Image (cartoon, rainbow, N blue to C red; front, side):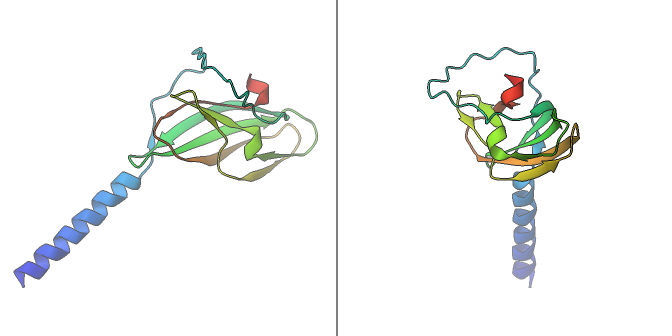
Length: 134
């Protein structure tokens, strides 16, 4: 009976540890004023749009998942739809990637926050930007 109890405790301990590995942690903030100058030989840029990033919070976990909570403002007085093509993340190896597909509607001059995934990647995100942040 003691062996069964030990096995159950080991399984519960492993499950708790696995959950903590999956949990997202807020990454140390990189100031927006920091100048980064990675080459962009492929000329990867976000789609032109009416969105400006107000701020963002970067998150990751030990498995390499990369997420961001991004607050954006629709600079237009009309309704607009924000999609993944309007946002790029710059990673610590100089790579640039769009987030996983999403859509979010904005009213004119509206500000909203959205949480987006940049999938799994070895290097951390250094910044997130739109065409109006360049």
